[in-house]
Length: 153
Image (cartoon, rainbow, N blue to C red):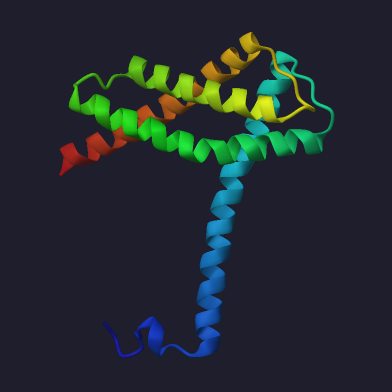
């Protein structure tokens, strides 16, 4: 460490404010990017399957609700993945099934609370399967990348 390295406590008030603002902007950017992926992804899927909604604002509220319900839903998925790894039953089909069921329940809850969007149950199931396929494939690629790194070390 050089002479210019200081701990956060030793920085001036202005520097602390700049650091905190920079970290907040980075976090908001990451959350905004994730929300944008969900928003435009669901918008595209809804347009493909012909789901009708009253306005873009009602669709925005639907995506916000889906995004917020997805946070605890993701925790449920991770708990099941850990439990299945102990049972040696952690494979792609079980991950797809768990992701599909959790996404279906989240979409059904969001549809239940939103009066301005109506989605039939078969369409909900289809959308949940599409999202589950995407999440399973992306999760599989992340796990494969971490396994390759472990083998290289």
